[in-house]
Image 1 (cartoon, rainbow, N blue to C red):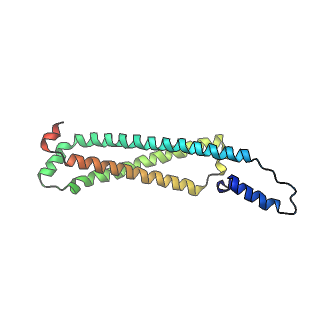
Image 2 (spheres, rainbow, N blue to C red; image 1 turned 60 degrees about the vertical axis):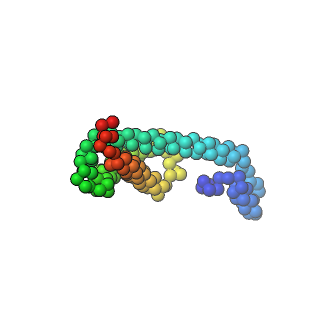
Image 3 (spheres, rainbow, N blue to C red; image 1 turned 90 degrees about the horizontal axis):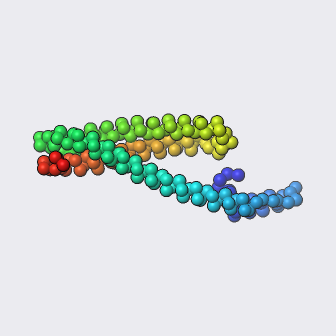
Length: 173
């Protein structure tokens, strides 16, 4: 059955339809197995959701610290640009381009690692991959690419905005 049909209510509906067929004498299915499967899937989904939120938080923190260190190194150049009349958008632009490039590179590395892990798992658990579809994999890869770019650009935008706003006295701290 497809995942949409593996609920107690759907199974009862399907079994009712099958039992109405005059060629079928008896229909037996394990309700406890379906209930256990659904409760385990909810638990696994909750644990994975918490793990994803934790990893996103760590990613934001690491990227923010890396960008902050990079910009701290360039703080005097940024201040000099401000002194000669550069706008915040003009100063921010090259850093955002660099962030897009870094996001693409990071996403591509993540995609390669994901595909490598999937290929290793496919050798070990070939029957597990009967439920995967190419469209789902492409969607996940697209989400990875988009999130890599968005995370890098958002963090860079915020950090550059802070660095551009620094006064001369704050540059030395």
